[in-house]
Length: 386
Ligand SMILES: Cc1cc2nc3c(=O)[nH]c(=O)nc-3n(C[C@H](O)[C@H](O)[C@H](O)COP(=O)(O)OP(=O)(O)OC[C@H]3O[C@@H](n4cnc5c(N)ncnc54)[C@H](O)[C@@H]3O)c2cc1C
Image (cartoon, rainbow, N blue to C red):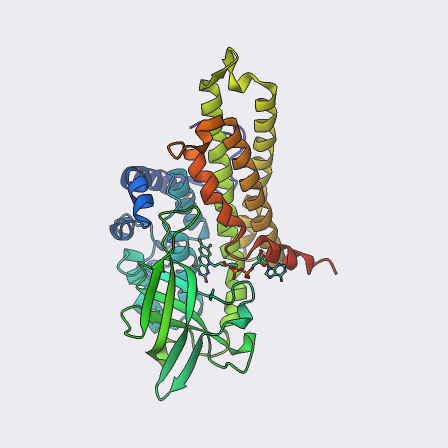
């Protein structure tokens, strides 16, 4: 595929990260890409994908080596996530596992919790999920109805969750639940449930518009009894604060993915329009094609430089929620617009499943929805105006 930027390289890339980039690229293109069609048809990546990636050292890249992780930084996670997407593997939920669930345990868990779960997550023996969304509430997280009520030495969890990434494969799930249902945000805690618990039940693997191999499920908790030690951290009622602290990173992950997908769409389309002929010339030679791709390339470079800047801010601990929201909202909006234009330049081929651009079109849509909808992103940005 054509590389689209001749004179730009992300300023945070260094030699060590380039070595990881090469290794991740080789791993994903050899071990994952050949299975993508089969996984899409199955509606699920193979469970062995997790252990293979663990053996290759690509899970939990940011987790310190003392807990079995890669001992890197968020930049290492970013490199792995970018290469996964460049290899055309959109449905494998490692971003949730390594960039969301592992950091919650690392940042807010007790030492015994870190030692118990992180090494198994780093090998792929355990797959992680996080369950915030419920059938009746998504954007309004304070309104979750799942409860975790103390009973003797235990919590008893009741409620249901939906649209949960890694729902079929997960071995542990961080459940957002009310330990004090009389309160709003202050009553929310994070509880870790291992999925062999008899009170936990997986629901359906949900059929979706895109990202067909992504494992997205309902889950049910019926008198699900866990020891009080399953509370993430030491203190009840901190869950909402922890969610608010971690959500900017989740939004940055999504923005990063949007940028990679824009770049891929443009590269794939340049290759296509150079080959395809109409009216005796290459489709690339029509002025409309050049203008559309020139616009797309300009916007993709703006997106890349903005997200690079956010990334640098994030590793320095300076990325504020509104800027992360700007990155998530704008890049995912542009991802959808650019992929739509690129699909159009493919003509009928763009509508055919066998062309990558059609899959990218379907996969892109959810980017404007999950991780906080783009309307919620604008709400958060709007709060900085007054
Ligand atoms: C493929 C996929 C994977 C997901 N993975 C996970 C996961 O792993 N864990 C998890 O917990 N969740 C997950 N989600 C859920 C996702 O985060 C929610 O769907 C999303 O936050 C929106 O919530 P909702 O679906 O309840 O929509 P609603 O909150 O019901 O929103 C409906 C509409 O109302 C708008 N709206 C709501 N509030 C406002 C407001 N204040 N101002 C303006 N407009 C508003 C929304 O923007 C939207 O357009 C996933 C979803 C999908 C589709």
